[in-house]
Length: 237
Image (cartoon, rainbow, N blue to C red; front, side, top):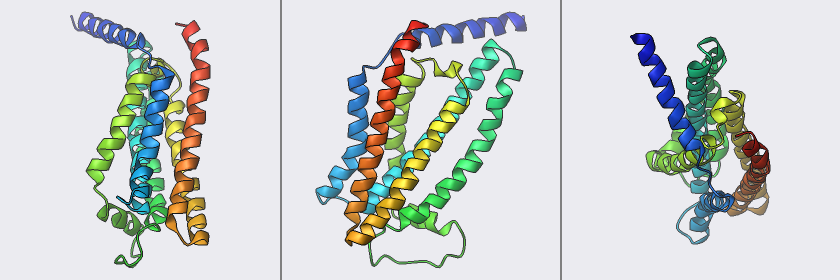
């Protein structure tokens, strides 16, 4: 009885996944969402409705959303492997679920040293009594739940418009993890060189321009590579 119920559950999940695979987002829609999401915060700053720190903090929260999305995708890989190949095939992905929050979270805390450097002059400072002080300073100056909801909505769109239709849950577990770390590296490098440029120009807005430009360019390149792989993927469907 239990075995029959399990087989029915597997068949139901498989059929639902196949229905989602039939939907593909047009490249133009994906490009439009990418540009709006990346450039909208900069528009607010240039219009005088925000500070450069707000943009840095927004992208910092976005990387957190990438990490959470990676956990969701790895969980999908685990579920697919359990349904199709059994428990042993899901062991590697299961290890990633436990290790990713610890390792990725450490680098997110360290990135706060860069993000906090964009706080406006005159803000109250705190002694560096622990490595968590920079993160506490960043969180004290942003509406974290709201920013995470905005960043998470874009990750949700990516999940339903790219991850599921392209059946990436059937692939290697490293792909979503490396994707999250890639965006973390983009934020770190752009923030580091953006801060240097801001110090040289004596204006933090130039650092933000470098951050937004570098990250948007990198995202567009990744999107073009993904679209170029689409015909080969469709041929296997």
